[in-house]
Amino acid sequence: MKESSKKKPTLVQALIPIIFMILALAIGYGHFKFRTEPLLILSAFVAGTIALKLGYTWKEMQEAIIEKITSALPATLILWSVGFLIGAWMFSGTVPMIIYYGVQIVNPKFLLVTAFIITAVVSTVTGTSWGSAGTIGVALMGIAGGLGVSLPATAGAIVAGAYFGDKISPLSDTTNLAPIAAGSELYEHIKHMLYTTIPATIVSLIVYFIVGLGASGNVNTPEKVEVMLNQLDAMFNWNILLILPVFLIITGSVRKWPTIPTMLGTSLFSVFLGVFVQGFTFKDGFTSLVKGFDVTMTGFEGEAIWEVTRLINRGGVVSVTGTTVLIFCAMGFAGIVSRSGMLDMVLQAIMKKVKSTAGVILSTIASCFTVAFITGSSYLSILIPGELFKDVFVQKNLHPKNLSRTLEDSGTVLVPLVPWSAAGAYMASTLGVPTLEYLPWAVLNYMGIVFAIILALTGIGIAPLDPNKRNTNN
Image (cartoon, rainbow, N blue to C red; front, side, top):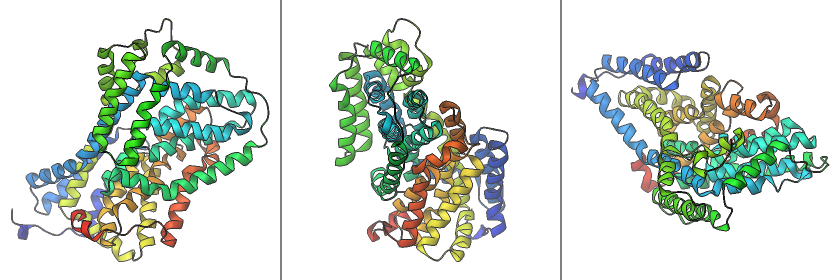
């Protein structure tokens, strides 16, 4: 069909699929807890119906969808590599060793500081905030209860530390999703995140240090924590060599080695460590890469407690397929509204109202807030505003890494503070503290947003778009 036969969408037509998607997610996901993926597909059908009326054929829409999915494939490959790596690190004993020794260095007076640092390290190493809170976080809550330290404060420090890693780890799904949505690169995105993450971390540590000065007592390790440590000690052989995979990933990040080969190579190296240090089999090692590690692979005699199985039974490329499907569904909707000109129409309306750099960034923050509160999904609070503002940042001569940083500052870390979100419900049930009670103590989660606003208003840490890359981003 010729371009001349296609109609330009009106603002009302452009807004219909977006408003429908917001309502579908708010009611379907937010109230009825329906799966997000079918709701996105349904929204894509609405967008497709309007596109048909504008003169676009299904073939053209399909090409647009394929184009969007293709643009997301590099980061999708990274997600799969993350699944391989986590499964391999469980198999080698690298993650269990970090948790085993991390629990034992807790000091009563610095429990909040320690809780933040340990969960930050574990979440950075593993790339999972939920895994960090569900393993080391549970142990720290038990110790806090035994010491009489404030449970809401401890839970807040754990959530903040857990999302430090979720926000900045190259193994985190959201850290990989943000560059996908914004059109930036993974490691330049992580480096740019430091402008807001480091100040937010410093403020967090100061708060936890001051509050922790009033704590006193001796560490009387709860029985359940002792059992967890004993079982981990019985399952794995601790060896300094197990820290090498972490060293390889950090070195690769600093020296900017190719992400996927580094992750896959480290995964295979970790499997060899599991075989030669732990005495496990190659068959189980390869199974861990695909389906994830399982406690039965250790040969442990007896029944492992829930805290241990929660730690051990994870990883594998299969564990990240859900995120992959969500990306594809979101890109289906994005492809149609982009090709049909509906997204451009909405962006033009926004651009008429937003004139300054600060206005663009603040509008992005507001959009992330809206999606996060409506859907309770960190993925959607990154993907939807990212697609909406991607071209706006380029038009304003702003580097895409400014957008990816803003998406993480106001999307990823906000969701666990929303009581009705999956993350908020998980943290509350896992740590035994209601979301609104730990919210004030999750300092990093909201201070990152505060510093993002400060940077937007002052222009500090705002990177301009490289003229040589402008054409490639359009």
